[in-house]
Structure formats: C-alpha cells, structure tokens
Image (cartoon, rainbow, N blue to C red; front, side):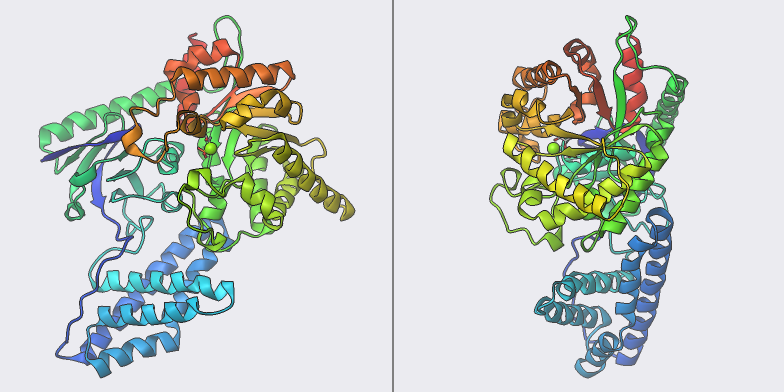
Length: 541
Ligand code: PEP
Ligand code: MG
C-alpha cells in the first residue's frame, strides 16, 4: 500500500479503480512490422473501435446536453471515415513499412498542418479535431482506454492526472467519475471549484507522487484530509468504507433541513443560493434545496464548446435553468473568459500576466459582437423565469455604463422584433477587484445588486496569483484586508438600498458564517453540496 498526501479541495471519500487519462499524448514509436497487411488490419479494427467509442460519447452527450452539443462527435466520426485520411494512413503503412501508430500520427500531423494553414477560421479549428481523433485511434492501438479525462471507458473511475483544465473538468461525467487527484493545481482554481460544484471528492497537489503506472490500481481518496491510498490494505479499506458511510449518513441527516427557512435563532434571514457551471448542475441545486442560483458561470458553456456557442444554444441553456428554477432567482454571470479559462476559438494572445489581462468584461466591451449574442440569449430566456444579469471583473463606473448601453441596444432590437423579455430584469456586478470596492458607492448607484467574488478579490487584494499553489500561506482569504473589503462593499450597497451577497468560495466557509451574518450580507451563494451545511450553521447561530 502507498500513502500520498495532497491538498483536499472537495470533501467526500471515493473508493475505486484509478484511470490515468492520456490527455497530453506521448511520443509515438516508429517500428517496421514484418507484415504490413496485418498492420493495416490492426489500424482498421482500431479505427472501428474508436468510431464505436465516439458513438457512445455522442449518445451520452446528446442525453445530457442535447443534440447540438453531440454534433462534435459526429464530426469526429466522419473524420475517421474520411477516405483521404484512411488512404493516407494505409499507404504509409504499406509503402513506408511503418507501424499503424506511427502512420496515424504522421497523417494527423500532416492533416492538422494543412487545416491550420487554411484561411477560414472554421477549417483552422479542425486541426485540433484531427489530432484528437487520431490520438483516440492510437490509444486503442496501444491498448489504452480513451482520449480524454471524460472518457473512462464506460466504468466508474477515480481520475488521476498531472493536471485538469477547467474545460476538461466540466466535461467529466459525474456518473462515471468517483473523484479526482491531480499532481498540480490550487485550491481556488476553477478545476477545484468545479469539483465542489459537482460534489466530487478531489485532491490536488500530490506533486512527484503522481505515477501514471497507478492506472488500473485500486485507491481510496479522502477529499477532506487530502490523503490518497493506492492499493489499500484490508484494514485501511475497512476504515475508509466506515468513514464513507459516516459521511453519507451526515449528508442524509442534513436532508432534514430541506424546506426549512434559512434563519438564525434571532430571526435574521439570509438568502441561501447555489453556484453552477452548467445546466445539468440544477439537479444538485434542487436536491440540496437552494433558494436560487447566485452564480451561473456562463463561460463554461463556451469552455465546453469547440466553436462559438450560438445564440440559440445559449438561449436553450439559460431557459432550461430558468424554467427548472421556477420563480427562484437565477443570477447569470456574463462571459468570464481569460486567465485560466482559455478557449481556442477566441484566439487570445499570449499574455505574461493573464489574470491582469484581457479577460471577462474587457473582452465583452471591446468585442460587442460576442457580448450581444450572449445578451440576446439571456434576455430572451428571461421571459421564462426569474433571471438577473451579472457583470464580472468590474473596475469602473464607465465599464458598467458601457455594458448597460450595449444591453439597452439589445433590448431595443428585441422590442423592435416583438421578442419577449423581462423588462425589469435586474443587472448587478461582481465585486472582485479592489477598484470596485473603492468605487462601491458610485457603482451601487448604477446597479441592482453586488455579489462579492472572494476568489478574485483575495487574489487582487493580496497580490497572490490564485493559480499558484506555492502562495497558499500568503493568499489567506481570512486576511483582515479581504474582510474589510467585504465590509466596505456591503455597507456601500446598503447605503444605496441594493442587496449584497457573496458568490466566491468564502461564502461556504463555516468559520466565517458568524462574521457574514454580523456584516449583514443579504445572500450567500455556495456550491450545491454546501447549501445544507450552511443552512445548519445559520439556523444554529
Ligand atoms: C470569484 O472570483 O470569487 C468568483 C466567484 O468568480 P470566479 O471564481 O469564477 O473567478
Ligand atoms: Mg472571479
């Protein structure tokens, strides 16, 4: 048995088999097979197996996200069946007498270079696709399971990876992933936040203890203590089975708080909302009895997509969430792309300091054609529920005015087309930069609410990159500087009679619940699994 210590970032215990995804790819060996014809046969059957995997992924994606999202896998299947692609691989095997893996890899490189050199941005984006599908075939040839972290070969697995990008994490199928462990990462990265949103036990920062040879071994992971046991002995296994049952019992007891008001013993009420990243998270919001959604990170719709999500696709996603939440408020944050949330088709330039770079509202204000598509979708969806719009990364009154001007233009266009939307839709901002706190009085006069993003507010106030695990000791969100910022924002909001909540991870920190109640926060929005523990804490206050 091996014991590894990492940093627990999402509570819960998982016991299961490890899957090490081959996301980064690895060098492909060149060999000279004795019988090229049987190598061609090997290629054909691997290609068929990859096509079958894609069909399964397609069906699963269609069931969870709708037909639109599943189309990508059809494109991938067609690529694998493309006669030019197949002929190029088979020719290489027979004429150059090379192994199938090498021929697939060389053809992928050649096709990708050809796509990348094209004028049209749609075709350029296909370069990544051809590499992706070819990697899938190579994995089959090498006896590996699949191409991505989301692809566990149909079995429930604990994912063990060097690192997971937010875009990979958001695609994990909760019913097939028991939890994850990564070598790198930081507690406030979006990958860790997503794990908490999805209620998956997760551990980061195991560093050099990461060993891809652990693939297929049994493991126990404890997302609270950060401990990982590979090939656990019977005593450890029994102990953790017991702890897992206790954890589940604790969750079961909390279920009794469903339907009860979120109110202190002295009658102070707080609105208890949940954070989501994609429409399917609403199930967890409802199961945990959240009173609304205080943060829908809409950029995950962009991160999951291979190309610009259309107005229609976004409209369906926002409408679905709004309808499922009925009259409960759904705060949808506009696009917060940039920094750690990178999307290929945005073609963002490399930046030395991306957290201080071209991101979020800065992209929306300089590329209104992108912003308007999202605003149209949001406004149209507002006719189906109780939606509010929230602007991220605000630093000045001018940014709010500019964003509202674009919003007004979109409203006028919709009115002109007789398209329904909620004329009284609330518009709020995230308070996550020191500038927004300093300007809180002026900003409060412009908007309907504030929601404090403590993750970025901590990063920018303390000058500590939230992605850097070496700064954990300095990036303390309990710092008086951060708490004073929170107080300043709440007080300014209340002076202007608007409501103020917290949607950063600190909202779920039970050691600060008393402080937040004293400061008079009107709303706390937390990962769905934190809703009932927080209600419990508030009711006992
Ligand atoms: C925050 O910064 O606290 C926040 C809620 O936004 P995100 O974590 O997505 O940056
Ligand atoms: Mg933020």
